[in-house]
Length: 508
Ligand code: SF4
Image (cartoon, rainbow, N blue to C red; front, side, top):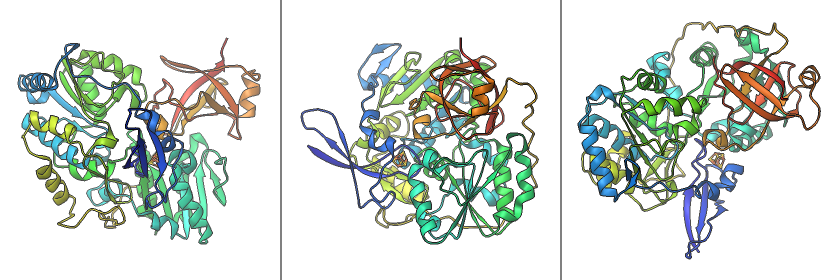
């Protein structure tokens, strides 16, 4: 057996672990790495199941559906990209399994072709956030700050579901005397909070009236590509107008690296790029290690939009929901094999633990032709790491708190609640969710909803919104009457951020 020290790519915490590889090519095993400071040896279910994540079908090198040698796929990609106008091109990489070095290479690859349509998934937030507050979305905080906080506000965040290894830090803070308050639509099941401030789905705006609650606190929330910008403004406003700090977790492991290293390239909102594809303005798309139809809500819609491209190039270790549509596929290495670094949400620079430069080499063969060392030095320099050795035991990328002002946000009201069949769908996102894995086949509903919908044990509930429709099992939870909670990704897109108005009924 060969033991590799590795990092879990399931979320922005980047837990350390060991991957045991059988020399005979048998199944891999995950072992706990007790010295890892990010997770102190513990893993969530996604981390302990990581070996299955790496057992997916490998990508092949292909051009027009025909398997070719890698050099041929690279050559075809280079020639095709050269033949396009810069504004007809787009480059997308959701930063889950890409290294800092690959980000640097990806940005310069786009620049080589004069393309400014580059997205790492979070670009739209920069237009709503004042420059002085950008550090809050770019940089997280060390977990020691969570453990040392005297008052923690969980802002619509259930740590046990969203970021399981964060929950341990909050429990430690409680042991150290912290008061934990959750602000949410429903009480979190495992009772981590000392106090719950319930918010009605139609009255998110009214949290502003409880501003004093946030004084002297550490507010912990989440930022995903689906966060309603108004909701982000609300978090920033609560932070700026009280003596609090704001810590935003993100779903993708190397989000911090992408924010800090991706900012020099052209930035384009992910959703705008997809609209450009839909309108026929963007004709070629380079997807780096990103199963965009698997990761995004409404992936079916994305899967219908992508064939409108003249060319899809996928660079990935594994086949994705779109690989059958891709004109060129280029096979890279799985994340654990990569040589390179990432920055976790605390600001630790972590070495992945592998030795392969393949993914980076593919992009450099199409683009500038640099060696790994040169790109690595550039990444280090741009992260401000100087000549220091990389160590997971240090917070090398620190954030600088700044004062900023934001206008009091107006949250558009989630209309509805009138018609009997109207419900609000609330997604509790989690590592399985973003990796296109459906870990749960049920939604949670209230006892009132069960009665009103005429449901009995074993029945199936149908959730409908426009074209989107899902049939799911159900579990009864202590929820407000008209809330439907899902930890699984359904084919229903959130319309206004946290909640989506849906119809629910008993499936025939
Ligand atoms: S998914 Fe996140 S919390 Fe779970 S093991 Fe991986 S990095 Fe840690």
